[in-house]
Image (cartoon, rainbow, N blue to C red; front, top):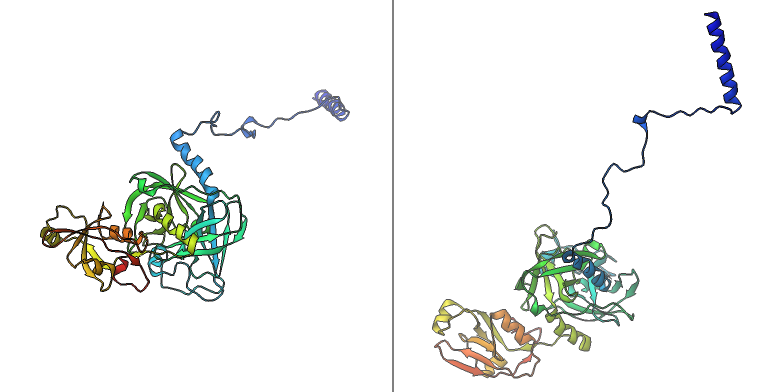
Amino acid sequence: MRRSAGLILVLGLVALALWATGVVTIKINPPTTQHASASPFWQEVSGEAPLPQVLRIWVDLAKTAKPAVVNVSTTQRGAARGPLSDDFFRRFFERGPREETPRGRQSLGSGVIASSDGYIVTNFHVVRGADAIVVRLADQSEYPAKLIGNDSKSDLALLKIDARGLPAMPFGNSDRLEVGEPVMAIGNPFGLDQSVTTGIVSAKERFIGSGPYDDFIQTDASVNPGNSGGPLVDTRGALVGINTAIFSQTGGSVGIGFAIPVNTAKDVLRQLRESGKVVRGYLGVAVTPTTPEARKAAKLSGSHGALVAEVVSGSPAAAAGLKPGDVIARFNGDEIQDPHDLTRRVAGTPPGTQVKLDVVRADGGTVTLTPKLSELRDTRAAEDR
């Protein structure tokens, strides 16, 4: 035992001496169960899977359209009603009782570049009452903007910034839009720049009670406060509408948004650029949808047309011989679908133009009248027709 212990001691001393001099090295490996590995424990996709072409269109569309979308901010130096203060648009965009805008508060909306030399389209309710307007482009550069003109009846405004070579968005044809057609909305909801949502055209020619010229495109693309003034874009990358309102009981998007058709905006913007205001034709009648009784008396087979309920004394309608109970069936040869259709056609015709009205009398007889439209004034009665 003593000899074994002595031998072990001698061997230990020799091993220690060899380790100390570097002749022998010792490597200790931890248990394999505790070994840390940098390898992922998930499965990686090998290679890059291409996006299906039917979906790739949205990516390409966003890249093309986003540079033409801007952020619009306004400042009121004193206590003033905010840009959403119009009673109608407050119903759509705000909750709670009306409040005065605090001094110096900035409000945010969207806009779209209409021309490379700095003309920008937005909603009138975005810039209403503003003492200063600032436009921020997609590259984050900012410019002071001048209000060239506005039209409260269509809720459109035209701004101008001192810039050149801007990425303008081409205007499309909203009359060619079909229900079910895919569209993209771009804007700054709640101040979040360059947000993109997609959906379809849910309906056309929507009347939502904002005024006599309602002709909205309804879409289920998500639109929220801050999207106002931003573009609704079709799959060709063309502007087909200006996002204006939402219907919501909570203040958030529920898939019912409304946009001003670009064809409506074209007529308004042309006049705003030239004169800063919009001049509309005036006929001087109050009209309602045709009733079953009126259709029976006038021997009409369909529900189209506009029933004359009132004729304003001294108006072009009175001078031409229109009477209450008449049904206006055609305007310059085009069939009138309903009272709103007549309103839009009259308003879109320059004052001084002689128009042709095909009228069905209460006794079933038909006459053709040719009134000369006058200019619509803000004090006009008879629902602006």
